[in-house]
Image (cartoon, rainbow, N blue to C red):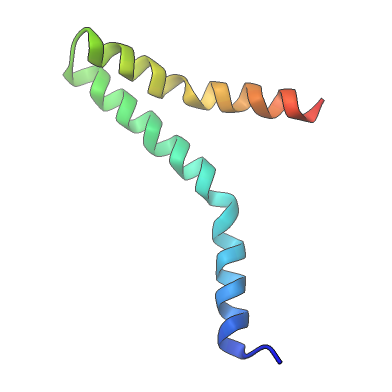
Amino acid sequence: MITAARKRRTARASYARPLVIPLALLLATLAGLVIGLTGDRARDVLAWLLAALPLLALALAWARRG
């Protein structure tokens, strides 16, 4: 028998799961923008890589779909 607390925990986890990757991409992009504004040379390269992560994720998603 499944308890009410376990149902709530499972429901909460299922709502949060689809948001993990978009939130990680958001944080990486924001970090890239801040690093790009505050540094030079190597930090600029890191900023470009972090800012490009959403584009890479989009390309990978399109490649997987067909």
